[in-house]
Length: 204
Image (cartoon, rainbow, N blue to C red; front, side):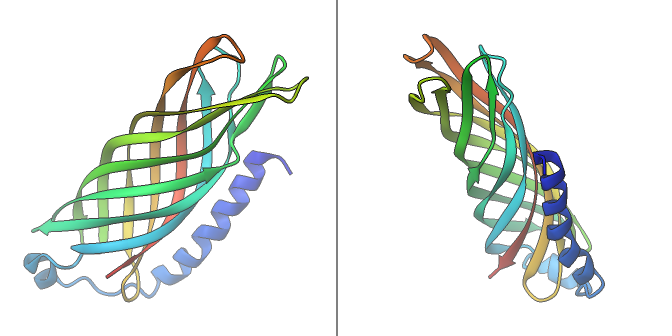
């Protein structure tokens, strides 16, 4: 099974429980929003999605399944929600081209979030710091070289409150990791990626 088909299957598995739970949504209480505690507070969760990107100064376009954990805190004023979030992701995104294999085994972000709550649905945008590792490998020799670098991330998404303290969300994120010099290739390389992911959060 190729990676796009596999990613589509995983997305379906992630969305199916959320879709089933959507029928049991807890009615939104306007007074809760007015008091600022419906979305406000800490949360933790997990996500699963698909990553596709491009490595600078090469013809490599790594892609693959990515998944990880996230946590953050929201403040709410009326229908406006503000907060911060951090996440750590593992990824099998890689690509082979012209004798070289490039992969992005992990990355993380630290971002600000701002959104607007409509009933039990939150629409939001996000921007902040990104960091992670890009690995280069000479396919013929098997020799590898890895560099960790920092960059930026931005995106947006939608989160839906479900039963109890649970919520589900869909999010798009663009991650750009800065270039570093590689002795193995004699050039500078960085990776920029698009990530579409689905996740769940538990709010405390």
